[in-house]
Structure formats: C-alpha cells, structure tokens
Image (tube, rainbow, N blue to C red):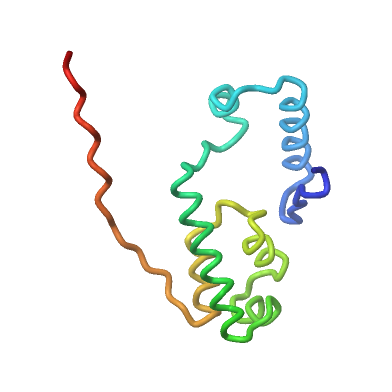
Length: 129
C-alpha cells in the first residue's frame, strides 16, 4: 500500500509531515468513517454515484485519447499538465480532480466538458401505519 501513496512535489515539508501524522493516527486509532470526517483530517467522502460517474467520464476521456492516437505525453504537451498527473487520473489514483483539470484534459483530446442537470428520483412516500 505504501507504494501507492503519491508524493506531490508541490507540497511543503510541513504539509507532508501533517499528512504523515494523519495517516499514522488513522493506523493507530482506526476511526470509523463518521469519526474521520468529523475530525476534519480528511475531506468528506464522495457519494458512490458521483464517484462512478467521474470514473466513467475519465474512462471516456482515456478512450477518446486512444482513439485519437494520442499518448499521455501528447496530452501532457497539449494540456500543460504533468504526464504523471494524467496517468493518475486514468488509473483511479486521483479520485477528485478539479473541473479545470477535466476541462484541460478534454480539450487536449478534442472534447468539451459539458454539464447537464437531471431530476433526482422521487423518494418513496412513507407509509403511515
């Protein structure tokens, strides 16, 4: 697992130390998800539906890249993004990219990021009994 931890070169030594302390605390205390979120040591969890939609969008971007015959190096050059960052996106290591990141990736493969709104499913009526 330790080899999957991404070392962001933009982080200060202080921030790396803070993150390391949080990881060590988690390993010691094994908090529940609720406890972890309440501690503010971690961002709130991403709802599963949102995560699945994001993964699908990134898969579609990868397919568009491959269909266009572009390498990660090509997309990195076109987008101004780091090749390693693009690889992390495609391989689910970066699970919460910014809108700007997605837009830059999309533009680099000849696509445009668009938004749509959909109605949420109606909640079932509570049965009175």
